[in-house]
Length: 227
Image 1: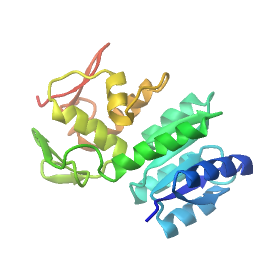
Image 2: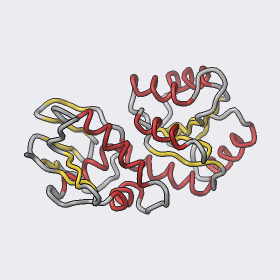
Image 3: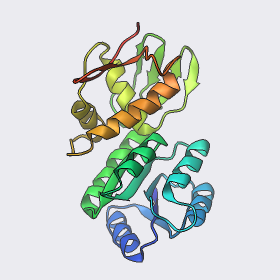
Image 4: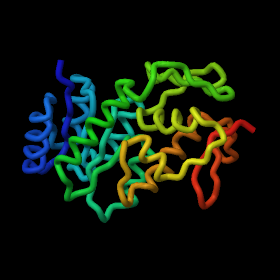
């Protein structure tokens, strides 16, 4: 059964372009041209992934992302203009999994859809349990617990945490974490890791201001510790 992608953009040309490429790649595609329609479709149709433009009439993309994250962990890839760096960071901190800047390559977008869906469906490595300290990850089901309590992570957050937990104490650069998540590195995307780390700390740390698990090694990157 084909996976369903919801494409949200108020530009008919972009919707058609993205739809054509996604359908050629074997996906079913729904589309919405405004925020309220997007929210309605997301709640009724339960798409496997949402491609979401930030600049929408009515309810904007950031507000849609915020609302959806209160309801579900559906993977979200943002579309945004290159000049809107602040909006990209805010979107990632709200829980978006990835972003693609306009103008964009439709082939790159399809590749990012595939990679994000692989993470979301659990195709992130061997089916086993990974533990470090009080953090436990079930790689097959993308389930996370901290001190026995379940924690709801997005697919991208889960993959970053799994990369760190598999090798406690090892320092990973932002570029290495990006490669672990996306399978390749992209110039200008390294700061997106900081936003995902901020979200992870908010969800798993007893005190995010004094991280116990995800430690920053200044000038280098991040490591998983249990101090």
